[in-house]
Amino acid sequence: MRINEERLVKISVQGRILSPGEDQDYMTGADGAPFVMPSCGGICYNVKVGDCCMGLLGDHIEPGVSVGCAGEGEGARKSFSTISCIGNEAVVASGAAKGRTGLVTGKHDLDRVIVHFDGETLNLLTHDDAILIRGYGQGLSLPDFPGVKVMNADPALILGMGLGAREGRLTVRVAKKIPPCLLGSGMGGASAYRGDVDIMTRDEETVRELGLDTLRFGDIVLLEDCDCSYGRDFRRGAATVGVVSHSDSKTAGHGPGVTAILTGRGAIEGILSEGANIAFYHPIIKGGI
Image (cartoon, rainbow, N blue to C red; front, top):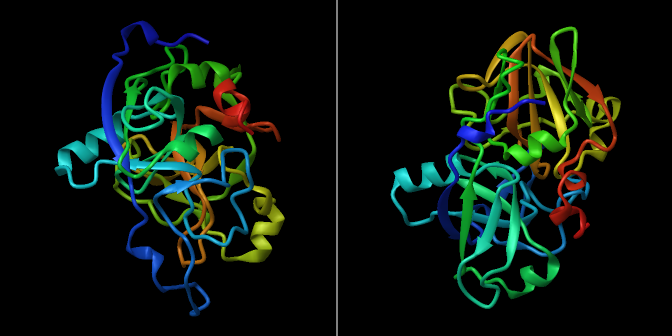
């Protein structure tokens, strides 16, 4: 698989571990009932990439560490999320875990980046610690597939996915295929270079039919009829491949979040494969699952 890696720029961005936010108080579920559960932010000690993201007693749970530029200007928050790519190296820049490394595994909302660290490192981290990310991947392209746009992905991730070709289309192994009727929060004009789009999972019959009850953090999935070339849009025949970044949700219009890495109009074919998960493509994560 040819890529344009020789022209890419690797550049640093830095943030801090984000404290859980205001959503930790009462929220209202799609059934109208209020609930209190852990939600976004913080250091998640017992949920990691490769685990099932469904059925947890939590809402929009981010596996590992949630990192951002809280308190910084809007430009810093945007660049932190935009430049960070799934598969990038993350380095602890302060505190007891200084020098230890992890891996970016997803993005959430418009300014959160999710990072995997091993269990020993997680136990050393605090909310005061700075995390430097060696941003690498935006601008990546596949010269042999001009109809496919690459985003949010480290070259090592793209090369490790075992991409192929069939009748002029890029073939990608995916764990699940998601119909457009299930795409909720995050759809619309927002840039797909930041954040994610949620898979709506409140219809239990559909969840069972599509096997979404076994969806995992880090799964590579295909969003049918979804074009993320210039914002997230419905377009028949288009397809977007992304990585499941956060957990399910009890709220209407929400569910597991998917960060886009490949998108195209009639140029991508998904091939179902149970092993399509970033945990099995990166030794730094595989060693910790």
